[in-house]
Image (cartoon, rainbow, N blue to C red; front, top):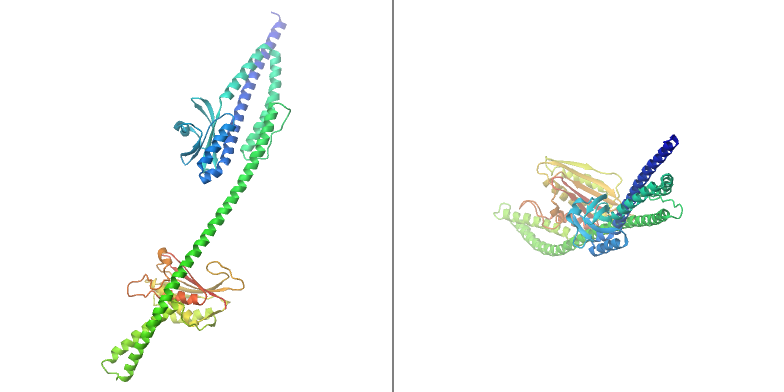
Length: 491
């Protein structure tokens, strides 16, 4: 055989080998491109369904969920099944006899997985709904892709065997013509998968790939608009939920205040009537006992008993005054009052009555607004709160009386052109359990032992403050002490 023939044969063989190898690589690349496109489509369908079922998942509308999944299976070509899972249970599906357990155990919670089913290969895609509240699963039929890839490989290899030289050139031209647009689609799909919605495929020519690129661009425009609307709807829904929650909290607080005020008003009316009648009886008893003391000699045997009657009547009179203070029926002598001076004068009286174990600390804030109040009644409020704090610290501690000002009352109601003077009495005592916080101002309610409290101290203090147009706020927790804040309006 001549050298020319050998060279021709070698050239033909080389071209044939290169052509076959190039065609094989091209077929492999096309197969991978189809697989990526199918994976992208599966991801797009799953994520689109995740946005579509967001509202039904929130409202747990299983009927609407079933309708959405059925519609997706009918409209999307190649979709073999769709189901929605939440916390290990299936909310909706398109299977006739339920979701197979083997499929549920093998399916991922997010991403793509190729599965083999009795009906053939399936590309399974999973996408979370509302940041993991649920997971939507979509299965696309991968059989047509396998068939299309095998057919394309057979045709290209056969063409390379028939036309050796032309097969190489045709393969190069075909790959260059087909792969560039597909690679562009792949880049766009990867960018969208990263959340970069601004990328769009470049449409070249009028072929199938160009039409796919154009359709993908329209689909991405629709998905981006749907994504933006869903984000806006989520933000609006969060704002509405927060506003509704705050409104419910305000309504609940107002209802509790109204019920408490109605309860105290009813008890106060009853207590005021009883106090007046009891005071009349005490006046007669006290007058009779004092008349007897004036007529009898000091050393008379009955004199000590009459004195006991007078002392008991006076204590009863003090008790009726407390009841009247609670019911807000006593007469007040109001005048402009410096709160800081009242606190300092009262603290001087309290130091000797609190005992050695209790350390009194006074913190006054200069420049407080004056109040219009009855000084004796406010002093009684401070004494009652201090006595309550002392009893809460049987082993000693620090009792702090402080003053301050506020632009808004305890309920957060800011009144224009008016400030509030604040008296604060705090201790380091045992604190108050939450179940008793709503009852501490009720008359005759006490947590002390029998015989050590009448249950009228805090009730009378509350009545005095309310009669002055103020309010009392309490903060306490077991083992953390108690803070009473008295709000008095500016004069």
